[in-house]
Image 1 (cartoon, rainbow, N blue to C red):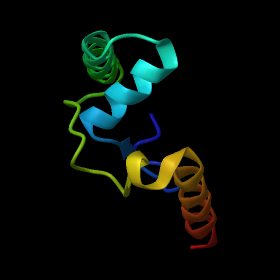
Image 2: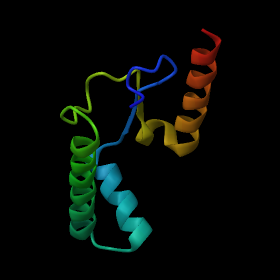
Image 3: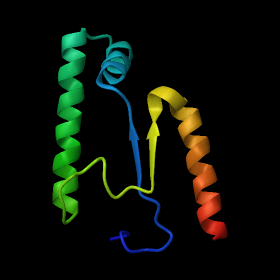
Image 4: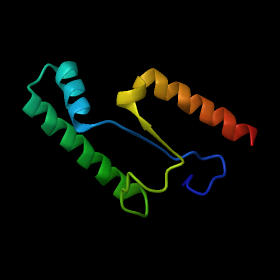
Length: 92
């Protein structure tokens, strides 16, 4: 719906599988194997959601204006970068 809106910024936030597994393991107090299974299930749910509500395949590596590594920047850093991107886009 917003794909063609000139104000849209297409962003992909990513992290390595190991980082994501460790996050889930700590957050839910589960084993590494259970955490990895949860991460894979979440990815599949995201793919399904995207397929249902868009007219394309979920390609994480294409068509993005900005990609952010959560492992490198953390949640706060990603938020700061996104805020700067929105301010910059609004000024153009």
